Image (cartoon, rainbow over all chains, first blue to last red):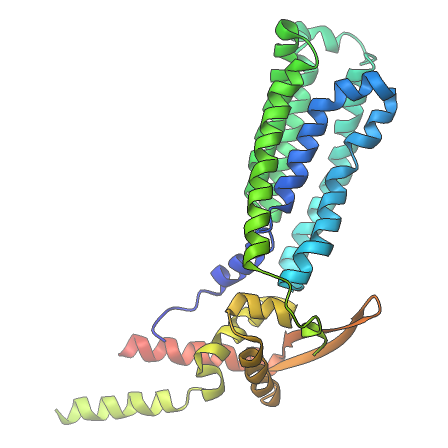
Length: 213
Length: 108
């Protein structure tokens, strides 16, 4: 009993325990792979490709947590400080995500106002979009206390301008496959590895009534 | 020598006032985990403390009897679900326990 009870550490450990399942890595990996495949899908199904690109990641998070994580580790409600951070993150996403999507749409449709698109050899928009992604995901990582999100921010934020540079040399869709495809695949494999470890370590309790006690 | 003896007796007296319900390692672990969250279900606490179902169940009953935790019955969809929450009394006793232990080890 001589060990110090570090409550902050216990809270942090409990909180981070809920991210051990690798679900977020799988979701972001899938999102990056969708980015990589977007130009190919756009050729085949035109604007409908957005339906295939956007929904899988949030669906993986929602269904993964509900069907895989919760039955194995149970439910926890964290204190108000964590809830407030989550609300801030939702507010931030509500403001920044539409702006980022708007920038992307304006870039794709080539109707960005004025000559902004041609500044810096046409790298302005990819750089701005990249910075936006880094800022959004870094703030998210900080607010959610989820360090992996810094990595997601770096991959997406650097991936956008690098794709633009590669496009001029090797063309599309190879550029996206090199940047987002490889990083997405690595993230996906990493997430699946963590998920399999998680499933092995935390099987669903035999007594399904464990929480109905 | 006499002074040392008196000091030891005083320290021993202090440790005797420590809450024995919380002092048990498994229950201390449970209390610490419930102290830092709003509420958690049985399975989550089981995973965090590495206790078996039976062990956790027995310790929970003792903590509930003492009024340190409360058991909240709710429904998730149509399924009944039990959430565990530390009570105000439990928080107070846990704070007291920490203070006493800290003081005891500082004076040791």
